[in-house]
Length: 397
Image (cartoon, rainbow, N blue to C red; front, side, top):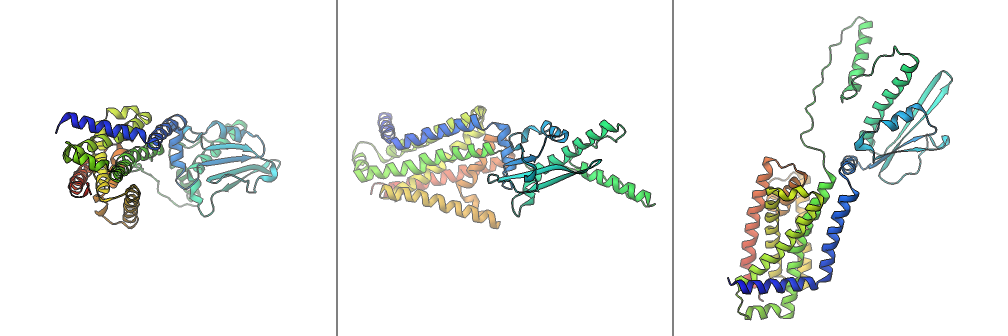
């Protein structure tokens, strides 16, 4: 390998890429999108969004017809993770109990006080997406707890002997209060009900971080864009214009031509991916696992892109080849996931790549992610070997 030839070939690749204004514009748009994600989607709002989007409801309206102490209590006790998702709005009394036009992906809880003097009634109407009553579960858990606390606080103002609230910090407060009422009823009838003790160990996994998911997608796309889209397309353009044949007749050897491409496109893709990741989370640049993951994914996509470039004869064929590969692998992974088919997904870089990059970007690297990284490295090695073999046999034709 001669350094001055490699240097000249890298300059050629850089000049051709800079002449591709569409490719440069897309890279700039990716960086702009990462900046917008960092500025306009803070961690708190994104966490709430990620929680609320499960079930299709990202905002919940609390509708009331007039201000009341209970409304003031609810407004003052919205938890930080739901502040961006809960919206209070005052509506005319005739609209309570009727569906108020709301944007798609929202639900509402309406409340009003009715009844006779001295016998007030709190009417509550819960409007959830049709056929999905569980979609408002997160909002209802907060709502009913604070309604209980708000009504009890108002009752204590008039009658200080009203018992204190149960432990609202516990997820079991409704269950324990209902069980205490059952024990009191059973005791009055001369029966015995055993005490109840509930133990919760928590969820096995953490709540999905929507920002980390979006950032992972952008990082993956930047590497895929450089290695599986740009490389085959520009390589086929060289073949169509005779530039590739001219390089083959030059003093540059096939190995040097391959090495220049192997150096330029992954470097560009990994550099763009690292820039996007740094905008999202600067600390990730100090993570060895992140860099190893980027190199493994970049190597795998480089092998895939170079294989497509060797088989495709035209730019159109290269573009369609990259898109067909992406759709085919996505379909296979989806079928395997939905039907519980084991082992087959392990053969795809696209299976391991998102997992290791998401773990690095979210800061939740577990021991099994190292096996995903090992799988990505082995697949990258296999794809690079196949790309070199195919390119030597067909790349010049």
